[in-house]
Image 1 (cartoon, rainbow, N blue to C red):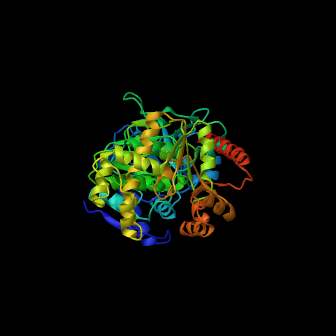
Image 2 (cartoon, rainbow, N blue to C red; image 1 turned 120 degrees about the horizontal axis):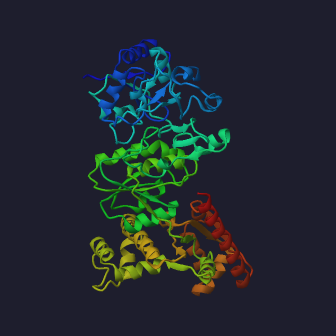
Image 3 (tube, one colour; image 1 turned 180 degrees about the vertical axis):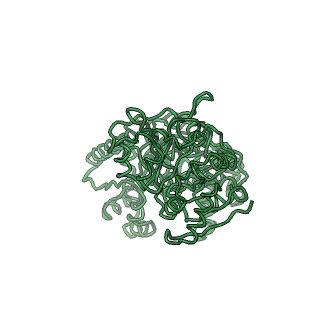
Length: 549
């Protein structure tokens, strides 16, 4: 079969809209764009056409399909006993990523509904697709346009990769704006039941409907004998070729677990800010940890991208269940066949950075007095040189002659090699940054420390900041810093000022940290009191953020 390619950018393109609609009217298969994912469309009232969907996708026969309509006016054509609630939801959220489960009309064949007496209906937020459905004059059954079990398609090129030669046509309507499938709500039960989280957050539905139950299939795999009431409930789905493990917990907690455990050569799917932590792995990113809309847009693209690599296993950071995180997490867990690892470690890890003389030591001592395990990254690096052959080997290979046989570093020799030579300094940083986060994450897990402080001048550059539940830039007035440096190191004011000029500015430290502590107390006792109060507030904030997630 030759698959025709349609490039339709406007619902007013009558000629191409009509040609695409004709494929549906004659019982053919047409891939259509929506705001969520691409759908594989056929006349939802034609049993033979619907059977071709199952054949083309390799889809289980008991997996129901969703009917796509151009407006709420079509509900009565597809459904029996349409409740007022359905029209209220349609007014609030259609066109949009919401599918409603209702009693099916007699005209809807059981093949479309997977043998159920209910049917899912939605109105997609894509003007070209609504125009095609209207021109075809029939509700369009359209599951995601991927081979069954594979990640859903969010571009027409994804569809081509899976369906070229299997279907009659593909409509290229651009990249999908939402990126995960529609939310499915069952209105045939009381209270209404969420069957699949999707592009419309559960919180938005609850604002309209009030109480909504969440089906067990959202959080676990259905058993073999259980019949799915909506698409995607039962079968392993959304999966790349390599097996996936989903890792839950806060971003910092899951990041620490991944850094401590993921082997070299594995695939990792992480938030953008965690990517530098995995130089020896194949990395794909899904957006910033705080941007769940971006994660939804990118999750299927990222999963598919692993199929172009030779990884044999994939580990994925999984967001919490707030907002679109419920949908993104559900897709990742289903891609993993619900093989998940709970990375909640109960630790509160705070990273501290700042220039010389800023007064980090005061804050670190206060944290240590609260029971925290403190990692001075400079000192820990030298400990690791003596303890870890892999780190020693990397240093020896890059800088011959700077290490003794037992791992003692000739700092003066290394300094002469790297300082003043940006390329060599970058090479040294690359080695250290690849090692320290892994070692510290493993040590946090090994010791079970509940409070951890990480002291690093290059906290964010090294990637260590991503492993922290909070990051703090410590600053102080210039006069106070100069006085501290002079007293600490026994040097002149001129040399103290020179040291300050050689460092990054306070602004550079602060702009990449979540909190700032200004150490300008008049004496040591007051500095200690302020430090303790600041740390207590920060720990409370960490706890509240986790509870909210």
